[in-house]
Amino acid sequence: MKTGIRTAISLLSIAAAAYSCTTDKVSRLDKAEKDLIDAAGIMRVLTVDDKEDSLVLRSECTDFPQKFLRSGRFRRLADRMIATVTDSTQDGVGIAGPQVGLKRRIIAVQRFDKEGEPFEIYPNIRMEYLSEETQTGPEGCLSVPDIYGDVERSRTVVISYTDPDTMERARDTVSGFTAVIFQHETDHLDGILFTDRMQTH
Ligand SMILES: [Zn+2]
Image 1 (cartoon, helix red, strand yellow):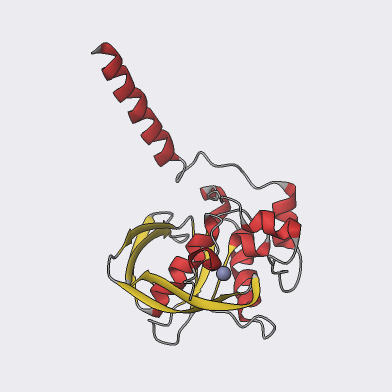
Image 2: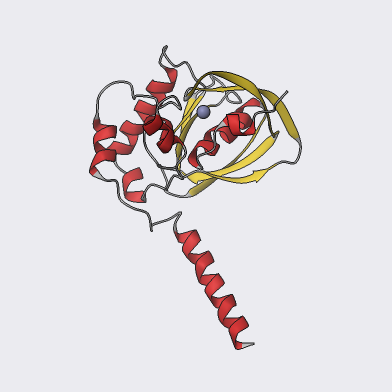
């Protein structure tokens, strides 16, 4: 009985520790990460064709500390990620941290469900809900050159992220093609590529 209680308590502290990961117990940016963000121009997009790149693309990403999200360097990263994905050499609809060499939970997504279809940035993003109802459509990826294929995804998702203006957790419900982009990009943060989910014919 005592052992049972002790197990329950240790499970609770594991749950608390996991929760605090999304708030403050995250590592500060190291010099390499800062240098990557501070560099000029379009960011290099990593691809599976390169062995070193592949290791980054298969990594689990971690959150940013709140202090970073309040900094000018975060704004710089947001601007550069969006400049990279919208650059004519890429012309993508979304991009994730590891694709530009950062093993951090951040994505940029084109919001086709909003007026003007703006690109928006989502730091410390989590997928909170995936609908059972699905949709299937063709996908490609800036990091997987020349491969396209059908992927089955949830029709509707609920995301949560840290709003850099308020530092509060924000939520959003997204459906349709934009929900596909959110699923594809958050997969990157867990080291998952769309080819892992591609339907074989
Ligand atoms: Zn991708």
